[in-house]
Image 1 (tube, one colour):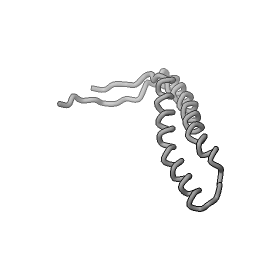
Image 2: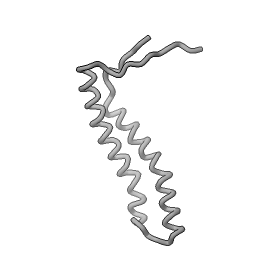
Image 3: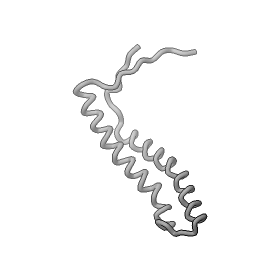
Image 4: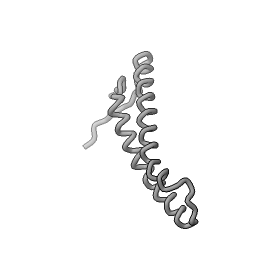
Length: 89
């Protein structure tokens, strides 16, 4: 059975992606902090390391919001992404 995604919830999708971006940035934060401690260099500073996941999440939210709006506009003109489903036990 074929189905189409003709509309995505812009804010819900953006919230989920922002939360994922925040979670994905945490390991990079840890790696960067360990590197700074191992090399004894302040680098970009501990403040920047702490704010990076927030900045990454906010940017992810904004760009996903824009992307979802564009998707909804395009899907209304040419149809949505089509996919096939099947029943499984």
